[in-house]
Length: 255
Image 1 (cartoon, rainbow, N blue to C red):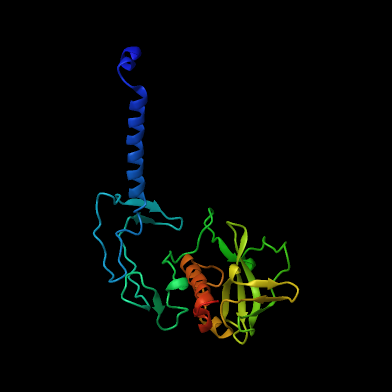
Image 2 (cartoon, rainbow, N blue to C red):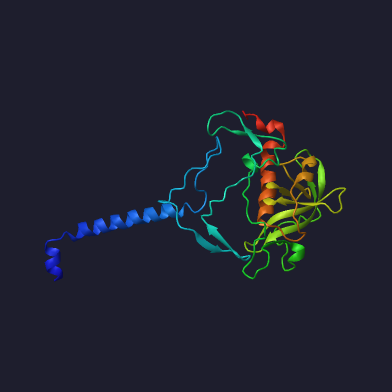
């Protein structure tokens, strides 16, 4: 029977057509799945939302969250935060110039996503990012322990001293240095590790992103020994904004 079937059918051609059909279906499925978030599209001038075509928008799917509850996507929820910036021209896609305090405007390098205002959790339900005072099994093995070192800002002024190291237990790395600000016994700030340099020879920590007077505006955590995903976004965004906006001289062209 198989010989009779293949005697008048081009098996290779049929196989090719089946592959094309499968590949077309795969592309269609992938294009639907990548629209679970960020759709329908929103134009930047003015802020208009496009029509949600049901052809490529997938049906909502429930995702279980580690901290409990669930999230449905697509949800078609918009970011309704007021943009604290003005357009430099009327052309679509024109750059935005921050209004007010550019470090807290939430635009440009200081933009951040509205992640869950809850800590990232380990599989056992405990927070993943914690200070070493809450993770006694952790210690510094490589390099000099920065705790106790003085921290200096971009203007060369001392801001405070390192009081603790915040570690990510899931990735086994240091995420932040906790700084006790000079003159403010109860006021502490977290500095992302990529935004600082530990000078072991001089026994100091340098932060080039922001100046000393700007440390008071660094977003704080609500709890002393945990940090939420949203708080991580805001802290990282503040220092990233400082790389551009902390000093007006950084805004000009570099020759």
